[in-house]
Image 1 (spheres, rainbow, N blue to C red):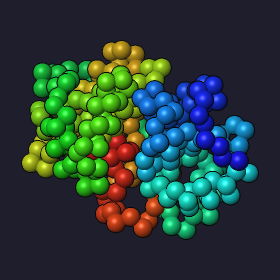
Image 2: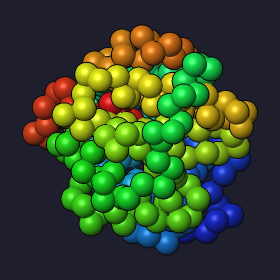
Image 3: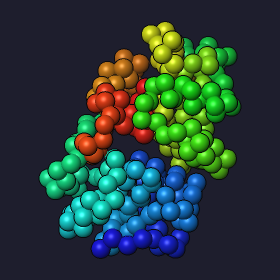
Length: 263
């Protein structure tokens, strides 16, 4: 059974804070609570939790016997991306013909003391308009400016996210910091600055910056960007698959990159 959660006492926040996907879900709860129609939490069976946020669906701890109900729910709502634990992802993959599984690697950011010199070029409180210009140049599927600004400014005001830039041409965001576990995402560089190593230097500095506060930081990478993060010196700590709807008219190289936090 899938049931909408309307009371805070019914949301298992302890469960959410135990995994990277759960912490991502918890960050949306911290930002929006349970009262917004575009950000809704559901119980899945007795122990599972699901978040539907715009076109993304996140699920943790869903029991295998709920796969048919989940598949029906997904067909009704048609999210663009589904992030769910194995083996539920594999079960859904056989039931949802209009979705495909994309391989994704979680990288741990490892500090490099030599990156300290980059700090003078880092803007910790940039103009969100400037950030959007960088992101929109790198992510063709980025939502329009007003929607992005509303969400990003709201998350930043509530202390959930933080946006930064480097040399006014590269951006990265702390998507959340939950119990000293940090997810880095929305990494992009303006076309005219690509090939100059800005993202490499900026991310190495960010790894060092976060390590100074004893934060464990990770980012996600689809296969097309995996080699880049290995070359930086970040450590692959786990891999998984995410489901994406195949009928969307997105180029395979750029599809879904913004949510995953790739450059």
